[in-house]
Image 1 (cartoon, one colour):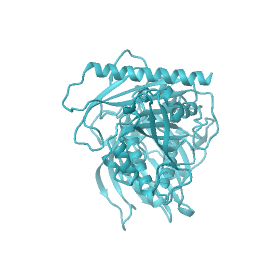
Image 2: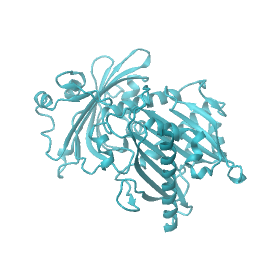
Image 3: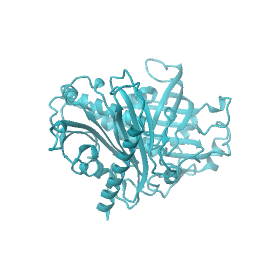
Image 4: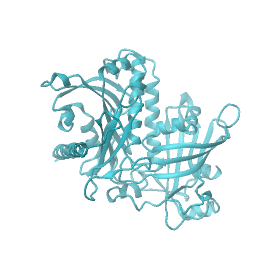
Length: 478
């Protein structure tokens, strides 16, 4: 706890200014070793050190922020793009006086980048929360891996976490510190510049995600329908239900797109970066998913186009028929639009596809959420049943709407490529790392055998989509 507070508040020579656009400070390892000689022991020779610090003012009060960090379910929901799975193993103390002051819990978590090409980072750690003076709270993690009778862990957390200060009008200032030691040899070459720079897992990404999610939560809690919302949403309850459904869709997508140990990807061909990887799972008795065999397919590749260009192209309903094979070249209309952040790219939409040639498909609806910040962007969507969507728009329970999300995760290709989302107008010449992930119900009988034909069809679908996207964004960029 004391180490984290000093790490959050000490300036030079412990933290030195960085010339990188994405990371503003770097840790001086010699100074760190001098100030904190004890800690969790010396760094193993097989691990690299990665440290970063960022601060932000967010639209949420300090009490709610502490609750999000200490409640594992809220934490994994808010940071779904970073945390693929997490669990509280033991609560050693619940805190005092009805709040989290003094709360202590043992946890495991798996941290991810949204691509099957970047191994997840697993940690076994203790999380401690303490009030540090009036209106200031500290939440700190530190690895317990050295207590496990195993070989050297692939990743361990030195004191990391955040210092939260109360501000007027329900805002909070958050100083976030990430300090880990990690073996990243298995990261694919196209992701190495991003990971080695500390952006992929660093404080900037945590802070940017928190800032964006606080804006989204403020939007969910809005009593009146804001002027930025358009379309067929007529009541606040319907708006809230649609946002809750979109949140579940995003969580489902994020939990199935990375290299999590909870599922096994099978590579279909060759050994290149842009190979398609597939996995299957059976869906039984889950009201939020259609029953049957679900085939997931994902691929990641580099594009010589800025992330902002890729994001704007993929989220725009007017260019959807340039890449979405399932919309069959039909006209896509936005039926409803919910703005949930300062950046116009942060929104939830309900889209209708009118194919014209086939009246049976003219009733196809697509729920889509797009999110963007300085460290990356997502465009996530799922076909939805019209009858079920009408219930949601009337304020009904969204938990029983069956969803199979597909979509895109867009990351900068290295440390100097400023994303251009969030509060920035920069659209730098750097490239993008794009992950495309589809989920398709290949058989509605959960006990059926998966056919090779189904795998070949999905492989063809994803490769065709990739080629269409490459052709469209690179020609537009020429």
